Image (cartoon, rainbow, N blue to C red):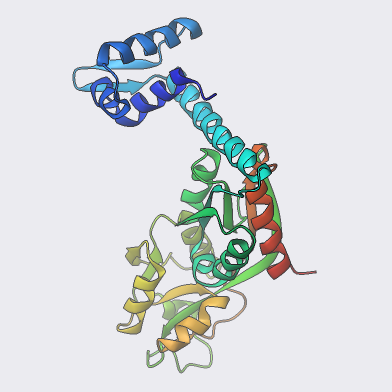
Length: 297
């Protein structure tokens, strides 16, 4: 059974207050304080630093929190495994997905997954690699669908399925849209819209301009929604970059790719999951569906 002490510990971590955590757990504050003290005594370290207005984790507490969350997640996976063995195929799968996966690749896979396991709860959260990888490592998601443009990690399995190329886009009547080839310096004359928090993407865009001896593009708009970016591009002189599979959606909005010399930016795409999560049947099923739909020979 899941450790009560660890549940108590994580509640204090999340609420940053023993009082608030006790209320959330529906136990008395002295009982929760005693539980935390016993855990600290067993480990021989202090897990929290007591402050006038709450608590914060020490470096020992931070280390335990990371592992405790994974332990809690594995416990939930074990419950799902048992339910599946009993024939219920119930449980939850948490997926982190990049913009092109949210709009293009993932919906058919979700439909196929649901057809196979109709009692499974599917939770999908959008993001960029800078946010999705920490969520995967921290146990907030079970798998990542998106760019695999990150260094090898001992706890993560990466499965490359295909390559994705990015292109620059503008509204169909933009001054640059009718050019046979837009010069890199021309692209810097206009404001850019980029995904918020996508430092890896901005690095690739910066590399394109630096390779041409130019400064980086100015991101005058940073938005967490690709639809917000496309709507802005549709009605203004803003430029943006999108994965090629999204050009069909862009075209319906009157947005067109710009002709530039060479390849702007491409990356390896696929799925990633923690090695400890690999046996989780739902992850195996979803990965198999995605592989069958999109894997390139």
